[in-house]
Image (cartoon, rainbow, N blue to C red; front, side):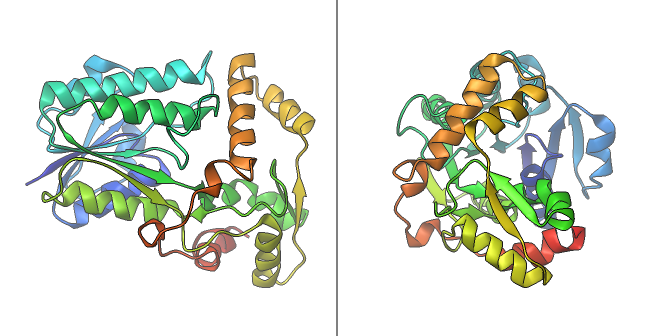
Length: 293
């Protein structure tokens, strides 16, 4: 039975990958730091492996015997700097693949990775890709657009205030993608033993939509007016500061928001058939957001 190691197994993407791989008869090795949260996933045939994925020795031990590895860098912000966090997680994953001779790796990177420096975590994802591409293992880097699930964080404001906010222009068209679709693609390649080499695959959802269009579609689905309100740079900085983030992390996130909001930047990537995924914005609303409202 195939053993597949899954980093950040309690997250949106990791937990979905764990369930899908288990449903196909594989044995998921669930990596995370909280044993109770791992066990609460209740994955049939899964094994909870307590490990800090930035700790090389722990990751090597937790992935022993794995044929495939699902790898991503969790969004941890309480660090002095995100660059060092990405480097540590990347180094641990690379060492585990080398030590345990893992055959296949599926990474979650970012649309626009390797295009330019100074793009915050988008650039750090590119550096992760470069590091894994030096391995003899087969490596697929998935490059998703903006997660539809980011709307879930604003469910309360949508319900109570009829507004949602992002630091992007209202007419900036964004390739929104469901994390469920990312997990589905990741699972397919983790289980498939026939592919080889080092690949990049953009995942851009079924269409690009603007935030004005998102507000209109939200209004239609919940039968009440919903308005998009753009956050100013000053408002974003104040919010990040209120979270107690270090000055470096705040700047790295501001660089990220600027990169994603650039009309000629990461999200200007040409759309191809291979980049399209199935879940529409309306389906996401019905399945995940509306039940919260």
